[in-house]
Amino acid sequence: MTVNSVEYRTQDYLDWWQEWREGPDLPESPEEYIDWLLLSTEAKQMQLQDQPLYKKKVEVFLKVRALMLLKQESVSDKTQWPDEERLRQIYQTDYTPIWQLRTVTFQDRLQLDAFMAQLQNTDEVDTETIIAELPEQLGNAVLSSPVSERQAKLPQEISTLIKDKKDQQYSSPYLWNNTWQIIEIIGFSEGSDEDFTAQRDAIHHHYIKKQQSRLTAELLKELIEKYQVEIDENIINSITYDGVASEYADQIVLSFLSYKITATELHRVALKQYQSFSGYEANGVQFEKVIVRVLNDIISQNLTNAEALDRHYELKRPFKPTYDFYCNNRLIKELERKLIAPYLIVSEQEQRAAYQQRKKEFAEPELIKILRVETSDPDLALRLNEKLRQGVPFKTALLPLSPNGFNPEIQPLENYSASIQQRISSLAPGKSTMVEEDEGYVFIHFIQSEHQQFVSFDKVKDIFASQLKQQKFSQLRQDLIQKLRKLSTIEVNQQQWQRCLDQLKG
Image (cartoon, rainbow, N blue to C red; front, side, top):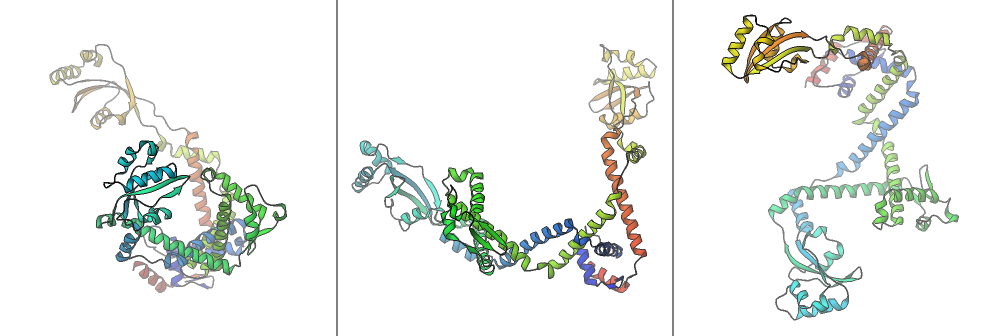
């Protein structure tokens, strides 16, 4: 098709439809696309692409989507999925053996030596028995509860102590927090098919995560070289929790591209993060490690942002059609904000008029006023109903069922069963009837319908304001489109359009 001497190909329409479509229905004509083109072109002629709000929206959209594409291209697409054999290898290496362990803690070296000596002189090794037999020497030795740990989950120092000791019961002694400890190896397992199946998803997840961490680190290393990141480690190493030496305060400690940060600024950011997470201090996290973390975050965030934009995904497929659509659609939003939004004023008079036209939609449920009594005795019900037929007044005839008098009920008709609703609807005020229900017999005297109530205007006026604004918006938008159409030359190649439809139908 051609619009104002600009030719649009089949692929242009298909790209637009991919972004525009909602639901499975196919378009009946290219009219929506033509309207969209006319509006976006008008916005460009008005130079609305220079509006600050438009620029900000597009900048944020591009930054977010470009980062996603950078991760996809540099990490996700390079991630290799493990086969079953590889998963089993990881299971055997990192998830087995499964150790059953407990720790024996001694307060000093003398206790340890006493335990080890007794161990040498005992044929049947039993930790509890050894401790019990030497109450004076081992009275305050501590024996922990048994724990089950996989090889990969053990701290490195513990793993080293028990590695290759499957046939032994105890590790070598080691010093820990001013106490001596040994690890008792209660047992171990080489794993099983059932355990592998149970751990398979976790193994798969950690394998992928480890790969992606490595790929992310490799990307960051490349970007540090590409963007010539400069770090003054001497000054950084001098920064402490208490502050920065005066001679370094204004020195640049990190710079790349247009980004620069001084030692004082870095200290302030790190201190804020350190104090924001009270657990850091409580858990003994060193302030220097927080500085390193802050530096890494700054470098990673800024470099990946820069690289994502530098790759210009918006200029090539598959992202280009999405980006072009977003930009043009945002231009239309700016056009609507400029030419239509100022005229979307709805007066209270208009809201009240709309309320009166649709007042029935906001009616409260119909209220009825009745007398009602019940009985489960069929013989009594027949006798009382016969009296009603003979014209005996309701209160007189039904007095046996309500000797203390009658209290009127006022409630919505819809609260009653279907059979009662139907019978009441057929009664005139002052008339009575009997209805047979599953539970028994119900006698009803219809007094009157209460005056119908409506939801007040004040409670629903915002609904009408919103609807009237939308109606005005739609009308003004259509008027603008019609005006643009009158000023435009539009030619649709029907054969090309049919080819579009054929491709959409698959």
